[in-house]
Image (cartoon, rainbow, N blue to C red; front, side):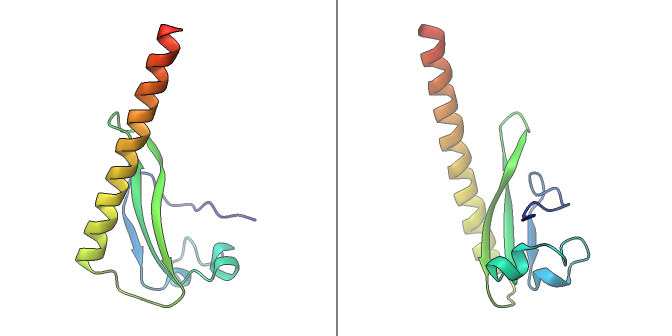
Length: 98
């Protein structure tokens, strides 16, 4: 099953009102397997600029993502990255002191 897409989801915000109509993802198996129609993806990027992936929301119906929804998703993605980096820093600290 191919769920990874040919887009740079780790660095760019993508919102699709109808995911299956986009030329780069129309044949993605997530569309029929997960019933992905509406998609919003916010990049998960480290403070060093390394892209880890994306924080996504999907919908089974076509939709236009509002500015408020995009803002909320961006805030949630930032919270995820803060947690990842805090845990990474904690793990690095434990390794150095062992």
